[in-house]
Length: 366
Image (cartoon, rainbow, N blue to C red; front, top):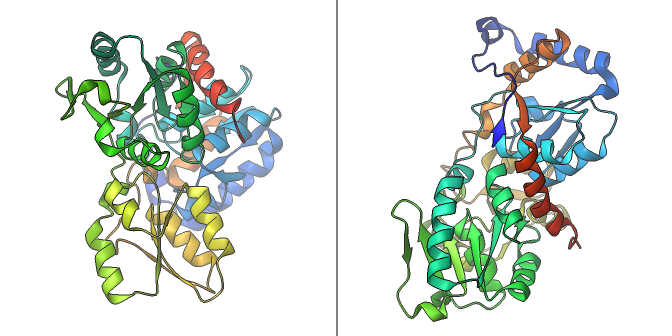
């Protein structure tokens, strides 16, 4: 299980009353003083007030890998969510410490698959299908779930490499259990030719397999989990844009529902979305179906294009937004005072099995 050596969960009140300019100045000073001993990775979904201080910006796995490659950094202050900091701890060395500025920064999707539910599901599915299933987990999952896939011959996947990893999994076993995001699993399996009526859904709340048909036809078992942000993009959003803006191109993340992806012009990982808009012709118009902080940043960076959110009422990822400037400064100042808290430490057994899962994926990286 993932552990924290020391947790400081309540932000001291004086940080709430500091001026932004003062906080920014103090972060700059601490970064200068610590130098290469400090590394701040920042996820794409972070607020601008935090991302301005990031030494690297990217997706969760990319940031964990960059953190692991940076052997000079003693302190890695991960501006993301809990499962991302866990992955960084798994991949970094023992003399590096990973911190999460606010321990409340979790992920609702990752929380939809806990290890106890997963072990119960695995037992039931083995009884139903025998030794014909290989587990895959999206990196947006807890260290315990990564470890589960590792010890059962499976692997992690990212939204960028999900297709290649699903194709690999089918060379190992005739069936896949895909955790915890049913939409990424469904969209990826569909893209490689698995019919929708050959996909079942495991409901962890009822411990039942939701499927109408002959169980022998099941090729993919999707965990009934989802991203709370990407589920808010709907076919109604797309139909309204098709009616009012037939010129606009719609690009979405594959964590969106199958019907949303099907009606869009394109879909892909966060990096794919960023790169596609970067390469797009000046004057082109885009509606983007992903997290709002990132969409706003893309808009700022590409004034030569018209870019809007696919859902005009979309809000940023609420758990990701728990990492803000006051929490970042607090984390850095506790490091300076040698009173550091919110340390993310995954126990050795879980880390070793989770690394098996990560290594199987990284061994097949393009």
